Length: 220
Ligand code: GRF
Image 1 (cartoon, helix red, strand yellow):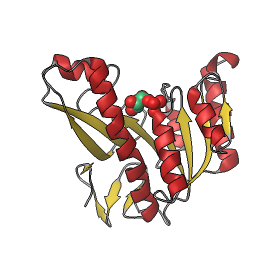
Image 2: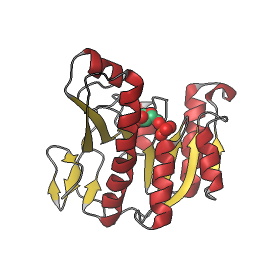
Image 3: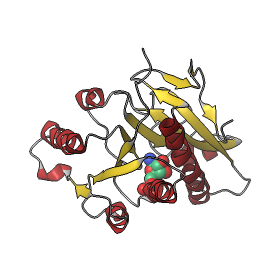
């Protein structure tokens, strides 16, 4: 698959909840560390605090609640339509708690990213922190990957590691991992904006060559 013609310039963010990753992205953009313009934020929950964070920074923010649509496909069509109005070069899921249908993933193929709080391929899906502690993992972390129809299984761009400490609880590990996510996601997006990192629907490139295993933060 050929590399994209030009690096991305605009970004949409999909959220469902608190939006601390969104906040990290917006702050990086505002400070100039991330040369991507946040075009819009969309939430599947009208009450998501993430929407307020976006509005406070002057970013257009919309909620599209699944329950207000007659079917999953009509909701996803509305989501595609809203995103298409703004024509974002990238769509970043940041705590977006919905699995999108294959048609929708295909619609955004090569532009749709997600952050998952584990060192993928370990612990895809729910409760990754709890499972990492229960299974005695020595470390944990977060991964930014391309979205494909299979959950948390798309080509990986980059990971960041955090230690698992002897007395860790799930909550402590969630918080430590989130702090790491806030460093990783803006950094990955900045590399995409610079063109050093590039994605197609099924391939990740780093400095012009196909990336075989994910970058480890900090990148060099
Ligand atoms: C993050 O841990 C993200 O990786 C996961 O959901 C959490 C969202 O947190 N998918 P926030 O809304 O960004 O604070």
